[in-house]
Amino acid sequence: MTEFDTATAAVEAALAAGATYADARLMSRSAERMLARNGDIADTTRSADIGIGVRALVGSSWGFFSTSDLDGGARLAGERAAEIAAASAQVPLPSASMVPSDPVQASWSNAVEIDPSSVSESDKADLLVAATAAMREHGADVAIGYLTFWDTSKWFVSSEGHRIDQRIREAGGGIEATAVGEGETQRRSYPNSMGGQLGTRGWELVQELDLLGNAPRVAEEARALLTAPECPSGVTDLILDGSQVALQIHESVGHAIELDRILGWEAAYAGRSWLDLAQLGSLRYGSDLMTIAIDPTIEGALGSFGYDDEGTAAAKRLAVDHGTWVGVLAGRDSASVAGLHYAGSVRSDGWRRLPMVRMTNVGLEPGPHTLEEIIAATDDGVYMETNRSWSIDDRRLNFQFGCEVGYEIKGGKKGRMLKNPTYTGIGPRFWQSMDMLSSEVVSWGLANCGKGQPGQVGHTAHPAAPARFHDVRVGVKA
Image (cartoon, rainbow, N blue to C red; front, side, top):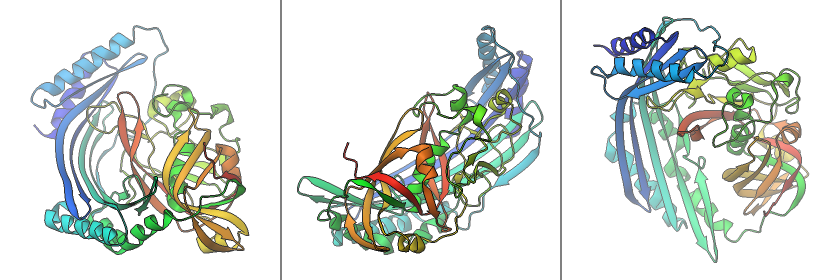
């Protein structure tokens, strides 16, 4: 049997067991991670698995069942999914409906110039050993480098006629230098913290990062932070680098516009949302410079795909249009409840888990400025780079972030380095204060977005650029 035959058998079994709709995702994924510490390889891990997950709809309720047994287990998975749905449907609720999705038969894969599997393990190791050794030579007490690769194949079949296969390859890496002082440690990361930079690309992405070339600077900055003055406390103009703007988007926009949170269906990990559907199309989310797109079609970005896990084709749409909230991340059932005509944002992190509303590529459209122009236009302020810590309430509203490094801005010039920079705010007020935005957009990949119970880890990206925010409280100590 082919993969499509197996998925089709699962769907047919669910229908025969009473489901009014069913779909199946057969998924195969391999992963590789390599870690170096202080000039030596510390860990190399490889994993691979394959299995099938089946959804079935009966009346008001979904059922889900998964198995790694592809030799006869697929039909059982379909039957069990329908049985679970039927049991849940005994609670009297209105029948579920879904917005339409064209039942396409298609194949999709992302572009890769150099397949990571074609690069020898020794070449990967040599890069990390050299980069971490260079950081040690330039002042790091602890030097870490890492590379991560995934290769995922999916076969999707639905009772409506979908028949879609996809192959998604992802790659990335980064380095971190930690300096230890009297009662403190300071860290600098490149190109970003929390996994470095990642995308739906191949080894060419790692080459472009130039980890070895950036290693000395990263270590020297970590060491310099030990003797830098503390970020002062007060209210001032705040300039954020693109990677920190990306995390700001993730926490105060991306999670907030997930429709399952808005409807109250999902509250695990990140809580619910402060947004009210009655204000969709009228709520002022930010300044005129704030246009946020949901776009899983961006070539090379980590949240890109051809079709989501409900078979909906990837398409770009706006979430915020020149400051006004206009769109959400939705699935076919949640969109129907909300009276919307679109979906396309449902994924799971593997065949074992039920697909749910997840971020794709959610980010800012380019602004009219450059970082150089933003700094030159700032008489007094603070510039912060690279996330170090984050905290946000369970409505995605009140937040506090810490960054790895800050710089004083005086008279339009970047001045002395500042350590332990932090800032705090309230989502819409903060975004409404954005008065300058760079055109220098990078799609920052994030591979550790947690959601759901049992927990799932999603891959997403946030196109972002440096931006200035007016009258922000910085230097918060608690």
